[in-house]
Length: 139
Image 1 (cartoon, rainbow, N blue to C red):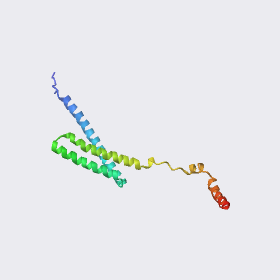
Image 2: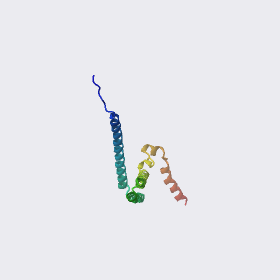
Image 3: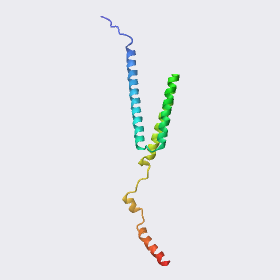
């Protein structure tokens, strides 16, 4: 009978594999969110390019991204990247506000033919010309 010697670091490989898969999943989710944000901002700029608030937010985002990257290169502090994140968040919130403001979903619903017929006076249009004629004759 022989004894099999198993290395004790197999659990560490398993743990590293699980952590690697979690990191990969988080990177994929982050990439998806970045692409979605870029597409959303691009569509909003293409649709509503005449809104000055979008251009102001875009310039603000650009300035903060440049400032954040310059401060990061000068200080080597990873926290300076937060400045760029603030600019991107402002741009996305502005795009969302402009998109929601200009959607047709917030417009009042146009009444249908049935509502127009049921909720309007039928004789008002007929009485109005007669009243005007009576006023003309009385004058």
